[in-house]
Length: 365
Image (tube, rainbow, N blue to C red; front, side, top):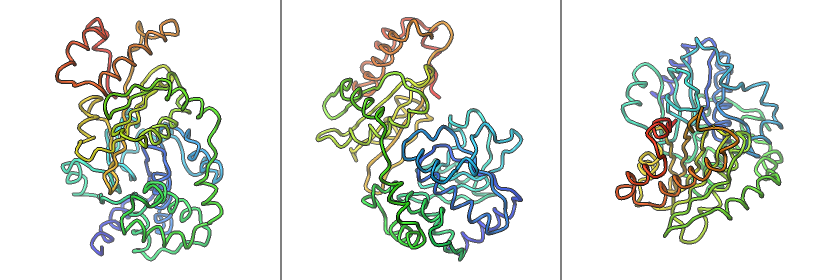
């Protein structure tokens, strides 16, 4: 750990002001970013945090409002174009579609997801790359803070959200490693227990239950796989897809659950879960939705993944054909999730799209 600490300190010393980027808004990314911010501030380095997407999930929204994170975190569109060198936490993908085409060159990467070893080697040469198979990225940030002998104030925001991040990402410590449990216990000593309970027991809006009803009504099951949709949704509601997927995978005999919705009439967001340890879920999603599909796997093998698919624009879009668009996407999604692609894909593509023009405009983000 001593060598790791020295390398981190060297990487941090290269910044007068450290931009931290999170590509997906969730408790682990939020907690990890705030822990790194706290470490940097205690080391005399200013920090700006930029996030992709929205604080749409009810729990994320509760965190955002309670701690007034608008004063600390900014949307990625406000990150200056000339700023490329940065830190990323809870992710190691520099080509993530959620970056909206922005080019970043991370000097610090702290993540707990699987990663292409070539990427790790490339950025580890001149920066700090720490990627370990633990339950939460916040575990690693907590270990870093305690190794640097950084103290937390009692009831501090950073300790509270760091503990919540570990608790959430390990499914209430069910999927936790020994390192997760240790980091969680240490952070909990400084966390505000009352706020922690409020943030964990967040309220679900009525709209969520309406979407969940749609998911039940729309599901299609084949053997151990389930695919369903909640139709057209706004980007601010799209995080509800992940909550629905978390619940559907708990059904008996379901090994793969995929939930999707058409977001802002422009893209399809996919949330997927897998309980089958014999299935490479990363390959499963990439074969169907492209190389930018992402997966994280818990320490006990439960895989969580997703993808974004850009819908064709121009001639093929518009309110007058929303019904046809939904039907086409539904048919395609059911084919991709439920069918044997090697047997059916070429025939299905021709039937679904009807023209090469439509097919060419269907781009995986």
